[in-house]
Image 1 (cartoon, rainbow, N blue to C red):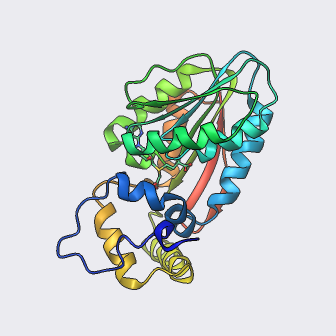
Image 2 (cartoon, rainbow, N blue to C red; image 1 turned 60 degrees about the horizontal axis):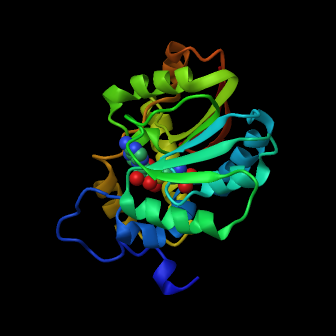
Length: 244
Ligand code: GEK
């Protein structure tokens, strides 16, 4: 990897750490940043591909909400064998969407993929068999999360699924600290310094607000999902599947 692709955004001291934004600077280093920061990211992306193979229905829409550079969309495109599906990848960051389109153009596949700049809170969704929220819900204002999940449940066909991955926290302060420590060790082992970890935390704490697993499961129940189970957890990161 070239120096250019490496996430060095918080490597030098910032006099004032601004709130984190998905801008051009982040786009440049995003694949490196997410792999070095999110334990199990590659496993989660690969498994989204597998789950899309299992759950994509003929003649339906597949949504990747907060798609960033399209990793989940590309994994699904490689795995879906259902006929006449289309993937709709949505992100509200102009810079992410532009780069995502380049990634999508670089791979040929049978399932078409449309990349769209939009706010997932207002975008229409319908006739869906698979919807992915891979580390996106945590950036949505807390008071709008239930409305979004209910809209997702309404957009899904019977038997359709939501794959939801998030950073979580534990209500028990001892367990919370333990999971945080393990995550910081993971980042250190991936080459981030204590300064980088501290400055990233300051940048993100106002824009990324995690919930507990219990809150997630309660919201999915409220939205009308019949089944929901976490299928992955490493430290304070998890992924679940909810089936309508
Ligand atoms: C992946 N899913 O690599 N509408 C649309 N997009 C949004 C909104 C919104 N209201 N709010 C935030 N985003 C990806 C990783 S990153 C997670 C997802 C992370 C977008 C935001 O622009 C960013 O691209 C993405 O959600 C979150 O599988 O960086 O920790």
